[in-house]
Image 1 (cartoon, rainbow over the protein chains, first blue to last red):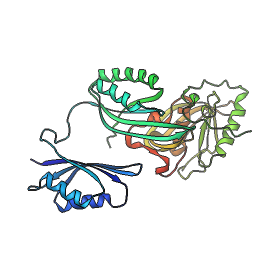
Image 2 (image 1 turned 135 degrees about the horizontal axis):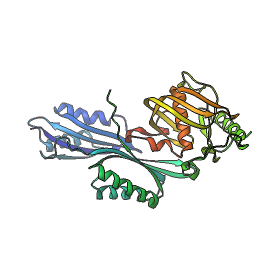
Image 3 (image 1 turned 180 degrees about the horizontal axis):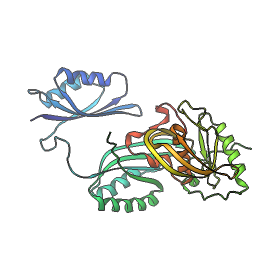
Image 4 (image 1 turned 120 degrees about the horizontal axis):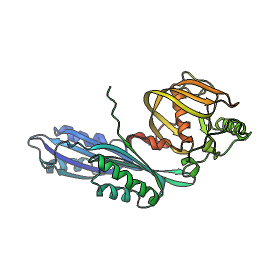
Length: 179
Length: 170
């Protein structure tokens, strides 16, 4: 059985963060199983799933990573065998775009309603840009909807929420191009 | 002729569906001329719909001739009551919009479009647009239906802040 650890790290952005972090992983014989890294304003954020080689403990790896990257706030957690591996359920993938004039609570209200319908958020990004002298807030998330009846209920909920939050919403099924 | 201010979101006109224009509507000629002046005043802009300048009329102008992305085109198109008859060859490409000055998005559009419309003199026309011209026409026709390019984004990786990437306004 593969031993997997989840790593999160964030620190002030500069050239070389990815190089110094992955150098340690490479030298320790780790494999990068999944990753997402991005810059959030002036900070660089890292999410990684790492497969550990036999004989390396999560604790040892964490100590080595911290020693080599002391400007990053770094957290490691070993995954249980039940957590490891991609989900294989039959849910329906959708993209939800929400945009409007910025105000507190947009992400919270949308996420809360999604959660109450057991709609799972698998990716979420937000942008704040200027438009007509306002802060324009765009929230785009990818979600998994359990089944077709829930899609219909989600649409009703979003119609109501659109008015409550004074935003625009577009729910689109994710299309897959088979080439 | 005058250059009109381009409305930006959240102006409510941008979410309205523009009504069909009567062929003899005296406002048409002026609105089309003003739209043309307005896109010329915005370097890189290849199209504008009447809804973007607060004129509630179903008309638009598109001119992709100055864009390096345009391979085939019809030069300056002034269209009234445009209707898509056929759409095919779907492909995603990056779009901007003067109504969302800071955002860019990858949007899937037909690369071949058969259209029916009236020209600026009220004469019915039918033609085929391809490539970037087809993309621009779909973007502007969407405006006339109150549909904005953000409504067509299909993945969280398909939305960008303009200051972080290269510009390409529609």
